[in-house]
Length: 444
Image (cartoon, rainbow, N blue to C red):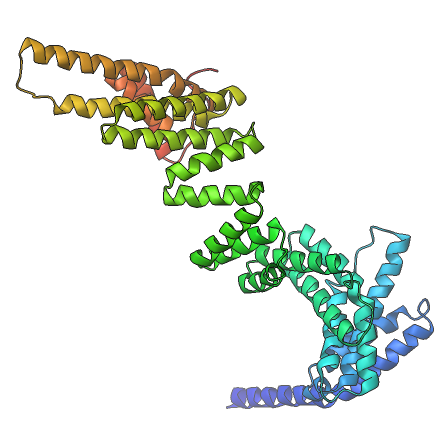
């Protein structure tokens, strides 16, 4: 019973304390204003007054009555703006001096905006709020840039968006803004959209990219950004529409070109890919991945024509695949993908011939049948021999590529090289067990 009474008293006391704090809200707000005035009269001699002002206005804002008062929000904006100005003055002396707040410019702006949008605010209060927005606008940009460079993309977005909102208010009140220049404003919208995209605020990114897109003179980067956010929103039809428009408007833009290549890769549009990849190679002639990708496209076309029994076309595509893989190897002799790809080209051709071998009558032991069987088997082993050096090279560069180790293990098994087959079986087991092979078996 005593314990119950204690908790009842404690609960009553806490309720009373909260109520008292709410009742004291207007009083705290006035005290915060007076502390700010004291600081402004003697900044060097009364530095503690500014901290007092901040503490009291933050406490006061817990009161609903204070939140409904424009003068209190204006006081809060002035306090945070004054803290920011003090920090910036310190930076003039020491450029490496840290800001005391996370983003006092944003805190000040939010307070000024509250006053500006408050129906009960007096005309002079709104005027002071507009002046406050103009004062913090440049700091919002600089702090936003610092947040972005630090990888704090959500905070960067909030700061950049506040710059745009401040501009709208200043224009509405016929005041000067840092974004009065059209290019400056469009750049700010782009950075706001991009920071939103990086922060995964897809709806916000879409909003600001779309604003630039609707101007009719959007740059390639806008099409790229809008395409990516539409994809993120799972609106593939809209994404492809934007990409098609961007490609038509900026046919030589590498980023849009690569985006289109990825779309065609996902959809398996092989013929369309060839012209795009060749264009990309013209723009980036030393990009190894482009040659490997183009080689892979021809490789797939070769397999398709082989299945359709179009031998001439199949041979043509095989030669193109080989040529592009070899070009990649010549550009970067340490690129394991190009060596693996060329090995796989021969390996897959051997596998296709193996199916042909298996399709031969198994009970026909006539000299003609045996001769044909041996000829196909010889061709298969020759193709495996063609593939082997490329897989060896790939393994010497990257000893932990699963597909390379599988290919080497199978080729050695087919060649009855039990020692090497066993070696690569062990290496495969290391990978499958979650480990890594410390060094390559074949040396470069």
